[in-house]
Length: 250
Ligand code: PGA
Image (cartoon, rainbow, N blue to C red; front, side, top):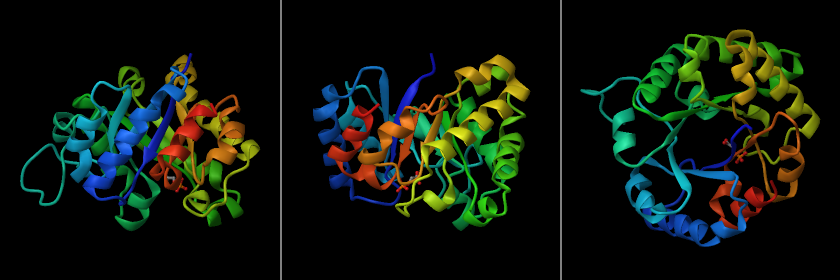
């Protein structure tokens, strides 16, 4: 049985006080969510410690949105994987399309980040996904395959077992346009096939999330797909009711 995960990517939203309140609201509503659905929240770095405190004793796990590609030292403005662990994180998102697009993250950087995250016991939520132009040109399979091969194929099977994948078509992120469940299932199955070509049967155990304008009205249909094991939720994770409704619809 693959682990079901619904993760909230808060991106650069909320103040510390608002973020702590959101975490408390989620904890208060947690009993509505089936116990086999694992919830994760990824607040900004500044919020991690107080949000960890607010989540204490609940089954909501904490994630960062990024981590440094260096273990420590003179890298002003960066936050290292072991610091995230010490702040209470169990996960970190890596390779989000906004990091790739706006901050020039390459596969080489992501190999370092993933390695450091895993070394320190953080589970990476590794994001892949094509841009609209790439889909229109029919290149989405090739793009996603390259993102998987370049960053994950150097991992051992033991390391890979701790990686969660998030497929997020860039054209669906924050746009209100969601991939249809057929489009999403097609590429999730493809991702599993690519993983199987390197990791064999382990591919069946890997959790693959869908992300991109996932909301209470479309989550159930997406989560019903055979190869979709949950969601990475942006905008709709900022409202406790919506995030819980998405998790409940599983
Ligand atoms: P969205 O973002 O749900 O707001 O489209 C998803 C993401 O970027 O993780």
